[in-house]
Image 1 (cartoon, rainbow, N blue to C red):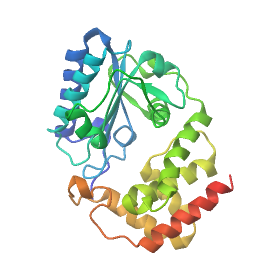
Image 2 (image 1 turned 30 degrees about the vertical axis):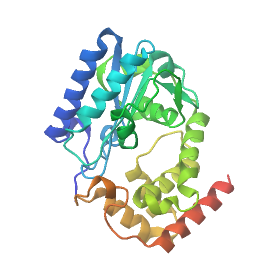
Image 3 (image 1 turned 135 degrees about the horizontal axis):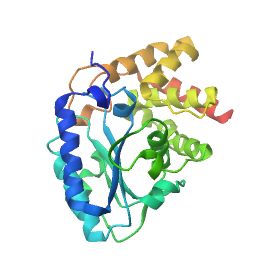
Length: 275
């Protein structure tokens, strides 16, 4: 099994990759760069090398000119080619104003992830128009509660408090995609663990964010026994050191019981409807 990693003791090649990326960003952005902040699994301590992404928020002082935004996007995409892991970088560049005043549809200057890679590389992003992302308010909550400052000003000085109802709207919006149609079959272990994590949020009501790992463990303690084999499989796949190609990372390269996935999906739909 993979060991769960956290920034303070992560593999040296991962640390070097992130530090090199930050150095490149600092050289391009100069005095515009306010800071770089790690959130998600590598900040929380549940990063698994063969599956997890590297989640970063970059804050700049002012909106970027479109040529600068494109240059930053290309920089990130080209650096991602040399990443030492299957999981990619997921990174958004936002302004200091956006960091202080989180909203449901948070504007961003640049975004990069596996899904955006080809668009960035092939210059298919129009950086002249304002773009927003409903996932960002969730990411900002993770930064504020459990993030790590890797470069620049402190989290306390850069980020404002995120209203909990906005965070919940964001995670429920993400869950809605998982519960829609057959989407859970496309990303099984992510879907199962995210269902557990959101049901944990709805049940515990402590206004505290959780990792997918923590959500799965909560599910094994609190969800009906019928779903435990599926949750155990999701946790095993997430934590496994088995290497998979990027196109198989969402399934973990294993077979899933589609009936069980649909049954958990339907159970989650009912629980959400009860709220």
